[in-house]
View 1 (cartoon, rainbow, N blue to C red):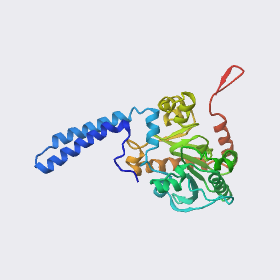
View 2: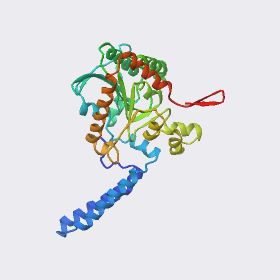
View 3: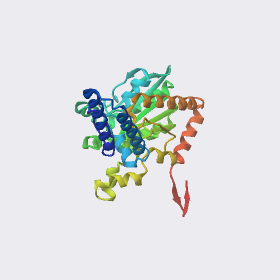
Length: 326
């Protein structure tokens, strides 16, 4: 696991203040001098600086938080919120993709099906999980579990956290585009309630391959985008350094996505990001999941399918015969 001292560039003022606070406390212990007033002043300055930094984050800074190596991953939320998770393996065609996991579990006593993209903490696990980038067999495993959920009338909960589907030659050879496209079609027609949660990165079709659901939730500092900011910058500006400009132009952050109707709810995070208090983040997610599951369970199947179709049909703005429609 990364060192707990991992600090993003815009967080460095906080690190310096924290260093000063530690020095004051250590000096107070060593010299037996009461420095409570000075310590309190530094603590207040840290809190004020933290509020200032995290109240005006740019889209690019939120992308950096979404990628933070200490950010809770899907399995962290599964362990915190669900009981008796039973992982199911393999796509029954090629192999078991460890970048995309899934299985049955209980949420507040009710059986559900989970499908999740999982990253790795250390180098060994990152390689095992392919850095959270599923291959075709991962999406085919996901589809197998979705159909199982439909068969047994289990609500489907998906956790999105990927920079994108794996773009390697072997992935293309096994038809990753086709696997994702089939998932889009089948999820649109799935006859069971479904919720997806963007817990970190939501990159391109790799994210959408498990994201065509009745409700789409997103954590406050996560992002969801048709392309990564770096990829967009490389295409439009011919320079990866333009990624901050691309992030702003793409409107990838949770607040933009909510205003555009792409997501249904933004889940609040602790100050500084979910990694600063994973338990608080999990609690907020639990509340949101329960609320939306209750709403969806109240709909009969035909109303559920109609509402899902209308949700995705009305996303975005397009032009037709000179008229702007939304």
